[in-house]
Image (tube, rainbow, N blue to C red; front, side, top):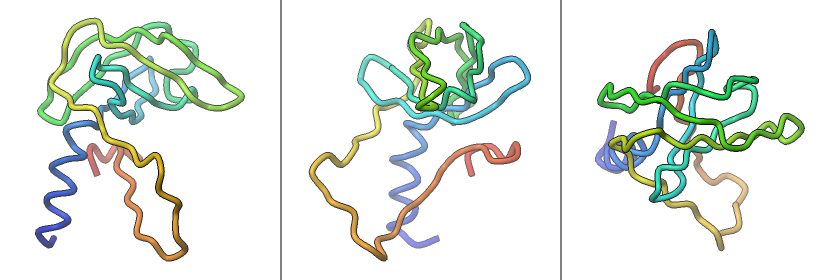
Length: 113
């Protein structure tokens, strides 16, 4: 892993959270300074309460405040402050063919990969 990749990972891992909802476990990211987490509706299912887990292992309950199955998006608010940082998103940047992208999450139970 080169220096740029390490810097990227340090920045991103502070925003990524694991989400446990019943038997489901998935990924979300902190999108707002107030702790709002964005995830997929299929991750939270129909559970009104979930468990959030940060990179350092901190766990906290979270409340699903919005879910849209058609769009497969859900928003979760932590019930208490957790050690995350909002991920900055590019608003005015058009993607370019060949541009590098990265996906960070918990595929097949591989935490924070």
